[in-house]
Image (cartoon, rainbow, N blue to C red):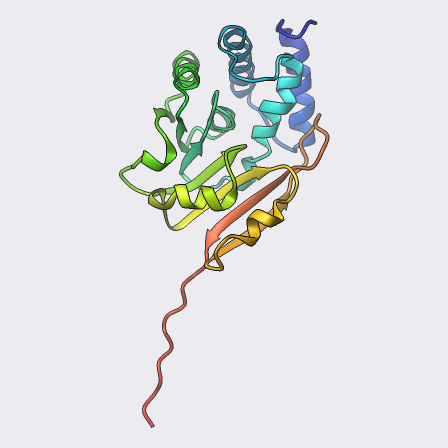
Amino acid sequence: MDGQSFDEQACRQALQQGVTALALTLSPRQEALLLRFLALLVKWNKAYNLTAVRNPLEMVGRHLLDSLVLLPHLTTSSCLDMGTGPGLPGIPLAIMQPQTRFVLLDSNSKKIRFVRQAVLELGLENIEPVHARVERYRPDAPFQTLIARAFTTLPRMLELTTGLRGQETELLAMKGRVPREEIAWISTECQCDIIPLRVPCQEGERCLVRIRQRERLPPSTTLPL
């Protein structure tokens, strides 16, 4: 198989092996949708250069499984995928969690055009593609979860999302090595948890940084003597 041809059976086998390694379960419909999304990505990538990864088998690990590894940490009903690019990790996650509402945001018009086409062809009713910069996007209400994959530094991410977060919002940022220098610049008002990630078919370090607002304690009171 050359770098751009799509061998559905080989990709299905790699996906099944990876999903088993992640201890996840795919329904026949979910598996079919993930493979159809991959086929669309391969097709559009030839003309629009949506991703530097050209080999479909490599895309299974670098894109599909690297997205699905977030599933155990995504438990809310509304999620914003910031800098989604060609729909990663948002589209694979939306396929797996049809009960969750996803907004897929990116400032690159050609990538959002692809996301819109993929959402239409796959019939994914729980996804809203949005063409906008993060700092200019203003939803009606804060999201419960913000996710980012290769987006920007953690302090910059928090700065850009001030208008998107509520007191209960958590930010899930996928990183390679633990970004200790970035974490050191985060306000003490935030709690950072580092979660190691193991992505099947992928080498190198991977981690998830979960950032939440610390619970504000009520002001202490002094009883009269």
